[in-house]
Image (cartoon, rainbow, N blue to C red; front, side, top):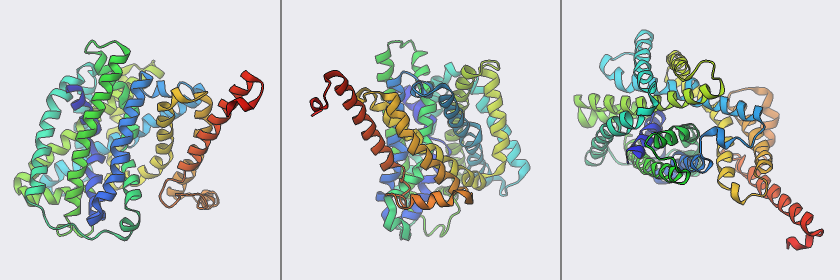
Length: 437
């Protein structure tokens, strides 16, 4: 249970708090359809990622060990930088600042943001320097307090709703599920699962569990506990967003919705409740991200060592946090469009590994089209015009408007490659292909 609560807290960070209410506000009466898509990428895929790590017996390195070494290293470094000091980690400090501190000081400023970021990552750094204590500091101490505060907000949401569910936007009426699916990308939890997998496994092993099957079992249970907790949090926050149209007509982000709601329901105490919730949630995620990045980079580039890598990632995160929330969100989207589909394909092929003829070859032929399509979409989202002809060609493929244009090519390559390898194997064994039938 303690490890499950730790896993829940590691995943529950900045994006998990600000995106569900914003999605709920856009979805209005179509909330459940949109939330179904959101839960698929925000909960289902991260759980599959944790299971994949458990089956592989480690984190991202174990999942990519069938790649050529240079490709595996490049993908892993890009993913750890994205989930760590470039995007996800700085976002924890910025969201904590906007929801935890701004209600008290009233006005944002570069100096106050810089000072808060330094203090925030100083605390996260101190706790991340002792990875063996994560279960005690996060799972047994911080998370129970976080659960209590989240429960208070949930009770307030249902006892004192701030209005009826508003009207859904046009895109939500026609594409509610797929909009929710894409919004789930921004939680970055599927990427987080690949990063946190080794943190969870290490925490279990530090408790004396060494048997591989037992480690996998406890990792799965921890992921399941986290998934249930995240689902409940998302549904509550989505409900708050869908019923907040009277509070705010056109919010800039989910942080604004939550701030106004908590203030309306709890009054002056709402600021304190919100500050505790957000800072605790974001702090636990920052601790996990720093620890995971330190663990990985110290293994791949051991010259600096774990502590120096953690310090370096904390300093970089504190520096990048100063660009502000809206800028950080805009920059994150193109990167996620490039990385996310590849991560999903990696998880799926890993889970199917025991049923594949030659997993390393199947993985290669699946990731080539998925990676290429994702790269085109990400560069297009970044506004780079030279990919426009290629992006126009993608419009002829299914699910382009839904943001899943990579899905069918990836599935076809998986089926065709595996079928060909099975047929080749049987042909070599029997000397004639008719045995395959």
